[in-house]
Amino acid sequence: MYYPKSQISTPLYTNGNEFLLNDRNYIGNYWTNSEGNSYTGKTPQDSPSNLLTPIFPSTIDDKTPSSYYEDNRIYYQSKNQTFKLSAPLPPTLSVTIPTKDDYQTGEFQRYFARKRNEFKYIEINKDTYQKYVNKDQGVQWQLYAPIQINWILTGKQEKVYNINKNIVLLYQQQNNIFGFFESFRGKFTKYWEGLEK
Image (cartoon, rainbow, N blue to C red; front, side, top):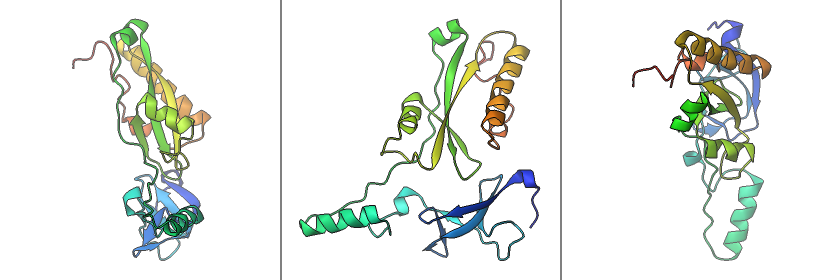
């Protein structure tokens, strides 16, 4: 299969507990396309290029081959107690709506989480953003990077569009990430004060 270089991220490597291949933990090289799908191999030209299944917290159990979980399981078993794994949570969609004060100010902050090894972005709220900034153990801060951007709400529609577009584009360029700009799908006047709701 062929993808333009701008549409893929290569080569990537996983030490395990990220993907399954044939219902088994996958360790090795992989690459990701702009749709967020991951495949075995260093590039699309590596054969065979098998689709990998992401491991979500619900698929991790007390058999996870991690020394942290294994040590804890052994400890609980020695105390005749049941060890239950509580995996950190991935970010969930949580859109922040501007307040009246934000409209008076003319701008507000938007928050996102970027998956570090894929081109996936999800909008989150300020509390979740802060957990990722603080590397809270209850969230998957190792897998997701927090993003905070300023978002213009008031002014002429064309000007608001261009400013928000440039803010997103500049953030993408300064942080050398791919797909953040495209994830907005041209909706740079979202929450604009003149927009009909």
